[in-house]
Image (cartoon, rainbow, N blue to C red; front, top):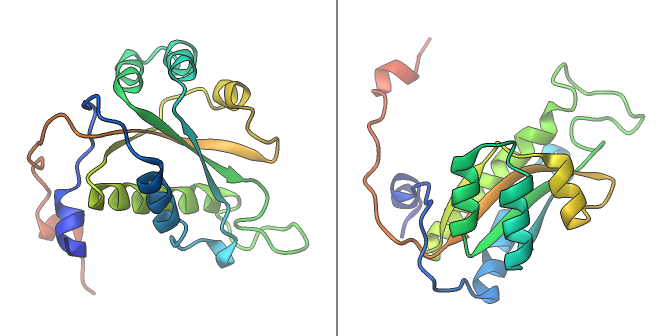
Length: 180
């Protein structure tokens, strides 16, 4: 699959088959995500892969801030990729001051680039993903014993897709680009 085809055919997948995702494939996906650009090459993004069904259920029950739709998606997943970032590096100078008016916002920017790269790589390997943003980061951090210098930035449900969906309508190019 070429890059443009991968971008245009990747969908958010919320229903999965019972087929597992092999560790070899998961490692390839994370390796591809490790090539995502980051602030001054700080490479702050980390992934915790959750396969333990009891932990997945606990996250669905206790860490989705009451958002039932995410709880259902999490329960359907075969694996959860919990994305974290190491705090205090992206967006900072060596003396601890911010480089720009975006402050620590660069952490989320780096996380977003990595999450997209992760999901495109997963699609290349036939693995469906959906990035979820409604969750209790502190609770997930406790459940997974995330190191204190990291914060949870995304939860990505994963599995072999149970169905294929067409792309939703996209805005016209005239609506999203300006030339000056």
